[in-house]
Amino acid sequence: MKEKWTLLAPYFDESYVKDKRWLAEHVTDDSYEFELITRPHPITKWHDRKEAFTPAIEWIRHWQHGVLAMRSDSVGVVTAFPQLPLVLGIYKRLRRSSKPIIAWTFNVGVFRDSGLRGVLARFGLHAVDKFVVHTRDEIALYSEHFRIPEDRFVFVPFTSSKIEQQATEREEGPFITALGSAHRDFPTLFSVVEELGIETVVAASRNALEGIDIPDVVSTPFDVTRDDCRRFAQEARLNVVPLQPKDDVSAAGYVTVIEALMMGRVLIVTDAYGMGDYVTHGETGWLVPPNDPEAMREAIETLWNDHELRERIGRQAQAMAFEQLEHSSISEHLTRLLREVRRLDERVPISDTA
Image (cartoon, rainbow, N blue to C red; front, side, top):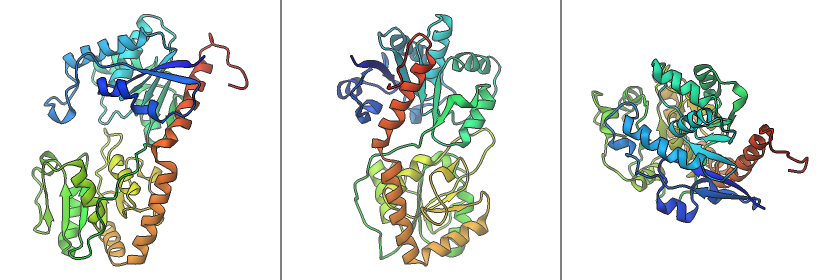
């Protein structure tokens, strides 16, 4: 008999449930079955939000969604992001449930102590059995902040599907591209490309560029699609992800980095937010220290002018990404966690061969 688990993410709609999307589509072990539960009310998309924090009505809807999962006849729940694990944990503690909870992609982003909010977060999250994070740096940060033992956190690399090749590197009029908005250090990048006189395309939000002097060599197309961004990445000679470390921010930029690796693009990325988990300096990309224009300039000049080095790094980056960061790797990581949390449940005997 198959072991049934509930999968729960805030963006689930009928299409996700019908097609068994998200983690379920990547699991190859046929001893498990998965149910996905549609969210009762659609979530407000993050880029349409005006509030800095999740509003009360969204918390109510997270609660309604979470209750459906906890009342299911499944043996446990795998969910995503911080809000749903929090409400599931509160429900579990209030109802004295023993149903195991795994929080996948537990990316808090910006975290702060804020009175009652912090108390409720610790109360609920202490009932979560395992947290999956996508950089090793997050383990110590979250363990200390939420006062949860480090052994409840598991590093699993963020994954991506293989990306269709839409374009090739532009030989006439070469340029740099910088994609993404969150916690970017555009002033450092702009000062360097202005000094070097290199054309640069930046696809970021208006908010991320507000108040920053933009040099003449930098173009900033707004309202571009994901396909547009991937085309920029593939046509550019170099991809740069300049990051600005902040004490209250736990992660930023790794989706942009992983997609560039998947496309075999040559990356220069600030060594912050756990980027060393994805980029090996000189082999699959180039790491530069934070807030260091000289290091950024040296990296750009080195890679810009060395075709063979770029070719080698691009090949190695893509080979590593296909082997370690492709969605097919999810099956092994997830099934291992499912077995582990079931062993932690003393009510369920697990044989040595499980």
